[in-house]
Image (cartoon, rainbow, N blue to C red):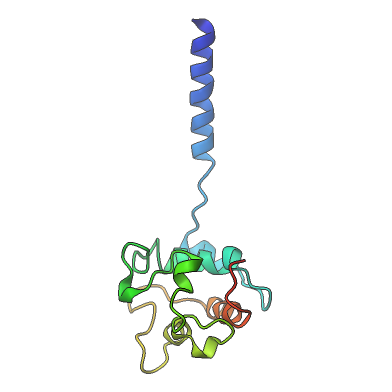
Length: 136
């Protein structure tokens, strides 16, 4: 019986430690402070955190469930699903770039009242698309 209690207590302790130490969410301030390089931009390391913090999960607009404007930015496959939204190799032909740059004729993203993407984030997204919009 004592052995069983020790195992239960050890399991409970490990569970608490694991869940307390596994907060891998990133907030908008943290993502704004992470610089995206000028080349070799990674979707996983650089682009997804921006989309996650500012566009899909945290903002609740372009998640897989909400799909504001019919667009989800919650996963790589969602981001590249529409060739007009992201045209790999051609950032200037990508509606995503037009929106985040606030070009005339498209709805600017994010909308008023939401934190804008930094110039570094916009340049990073454009570089990622220019480099082929890879799932890397």
